Length: 364
Image 1 (tube, rainbow, N blue to C red):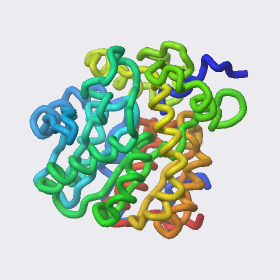
Image 2: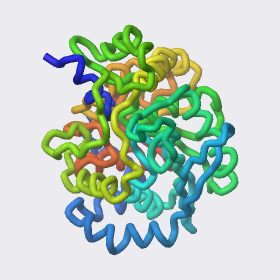
Image 3: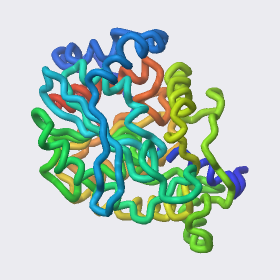
């Protein structure tokens, strides 16, 4: 049975079965075929050397943007010559735009302009505490405010075509806040393994960690949740709950080893308090969202709450595309870094939707 001390480890990641059918519109399938099936993960090491890194160095622009309260936040974007529409990519906890180089490259090949901003306190952004491995935030709404200001000041002047939103994990909670605050800003949105609520199971339920935070977190808000030191560490692939792709997992770990500034460990009690608080606000926010939202879920999820995603779809009402959450069979939390079969299904689902609003002809 899990112990209290395991809470921080469980939180370090902050988490209808889908097989994309032949009924996927032919035109939409053709539109994503190059991105989805033209190479395998076995080709990735060579592709990084021959195509992805040169693309990143020659075509992707990077810089720093200053938030309203004076925090420098790193960003990256690419606007290909043939861009037909634009995507704001909102990252999950512990992530950086550097982690998404393969996806940037694929999306640009498909004619999408892509923009991404590292969240404050993670990625290449400065940390707020002396222990830079602690994941901390004073107000969850700061994530939303940073992203919206980034869109207004940098994305909109450079974007092409309609602006859409692709958010993963913690980014899903941030995206929900953005969609409620700015109902006409984005044409469509995709939530990938969205953190509608953290999976903070300790003994009995996913909400255990939130109850413990309420009882104990006040005593040391900037301590690691669970009072156990949880700095960044490389978990063996066999024990990871993120992806079934050994190749993509190794690329991710190699990147974080080569660029130690990206490394982030477990969250603080204060971060957990903010995540738990926003999870109680999202049901009301869901009812205020009118932008079409495609929700995609990992069948083997352990990092966030799948049941909360199902409930959020119901709260979205008509805005939840297909009136269901699409579940990718055999997939773990990081759907965009999964093994080829699962990841290919995800791309063939979300790219036609982001470009044209098309989804598979399937009943909930």
